[in-house]
Image 1: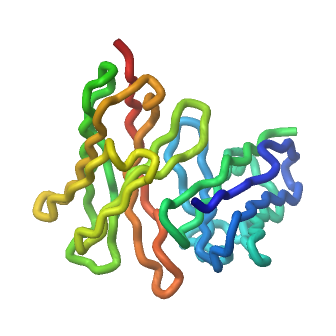
Image 2: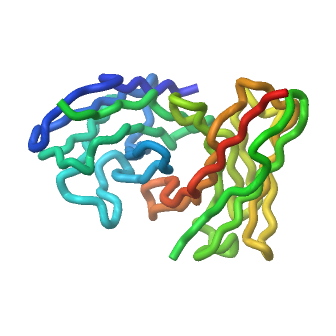
Image 3: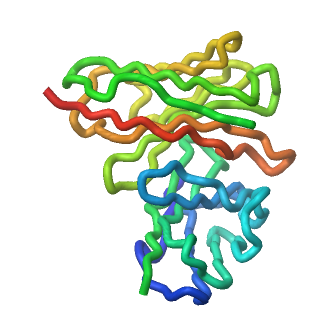
Length: 107
Length: 123
């Protein structure tokens, strides 16, 4: 199985901060990776697909990048509605696997 | 507008089987770019993929749960059914179904999710 290791598991940030979340794959997944945002009691929402492509309707302050087996989700200027838990997920091979999540809360 | 909704029991007893139905609208299995998957999330924990079925009836399962899972689709009713046998308290989780869509040459992604249904396993 491909392990997706997310870091940090949690972070505190202020409105306006630049936030970076990292996901490392245990083997090559090309760019077959998505990022999801999940708010308490709600279903996940896709933000980024193919590692760096912004899903339709997602604010441009969200961006994704890839370098080898390391993937990054960046929020350029954190907004109040961005406080949530973020997950990465690889789609390169079965079984599909998710990262452990990164909770972003208010500093 | 694409919507998915999970339905099924909220409480099952240990050793019983769980049957969940995902009823969707706004897309169809007649499209070669569509699949539906099941993902679960124990309270306070991360997401875990369980199974998926594609437009051509290709089925995939999580290896750790493969022996307990069955996924089927009813194209005419726009439904996908997941059955999980021998339920245990550790299977207590919110179960989501999600559309898996082929984004051109970029791969397949879960782009629409149901609201989820919390299933508790307890005697």
